[in-house]
Structure formats: structure tokens, C-alpha cells
Image (cartoon, one colour):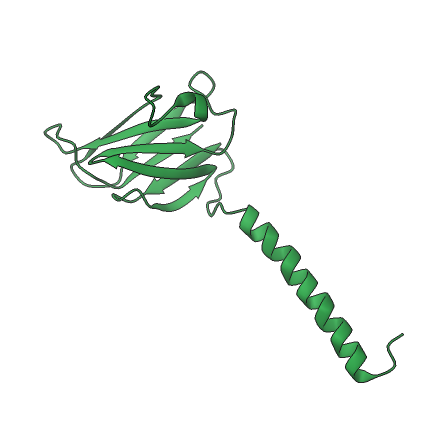
Length: 133
């Protein structure tokens, strides 16, 4: 088909670029970096709200000291349909959550609010994890 060595090299190079471009699009679309077959969604979150690892979480926003809004990627995640679990990953910190209807964090938009406090109940940033079963 391609008689010259240059033409063959050019054709193979074009195929290689096409494969890389197609694969890169898939890698971007599948941004989750956790293998958790029995969880619908979950994340490990740093005190500043940065996601360390996740599955099915679109984002986490730190609203104030010890207050975070977690946005889920699946529209089926809603208060009456899932079993959420939150845990502190910082010593001496307490974590709680709510399906808030406040304007900054809304359950109707697949968002949950997470609070972290110190042992005395005072708002305090902390590492935490959230898992939706």
C-alpha cells in the first residue's frame, strides 16, 4: 500500500497519534482513582478541601473552617436512597454530615454538607473520608 519507507512511517505515526488522542479522552472522562466496587461514591479529603482520592465525587468545596460541601457525580445519590458514612482521618477530630438544603450546599443537587470539629466541638479543619453505600 505505502511503497516508500517515509510514507509508511508517516501513516504509522498518524495511527499512533489517533490512538493516543482517543485514549487520552477516555482517561480524562474517567477521573476516579479509587477501586471500590461496593461503594457508589467516596473520597478522602484534605483539611483544605482538596480531594486526595475519590470515586463518584465531582468536587469538594471548603465553605468555612470545618465546613465542606461534597458534590456527587451520580443523580441517584439522594438522602432517601443511600447509606452515607463519614470518618475522621485526623486524631482528636469529630466528623458529621447532613443533607443540607442551604443555598451553598443542596441535596437536590446531589450535595452533602460535612462538618469537622475538634474534641471540644469547635469548628476545625481536618482530614476526613466520606463513603456512599
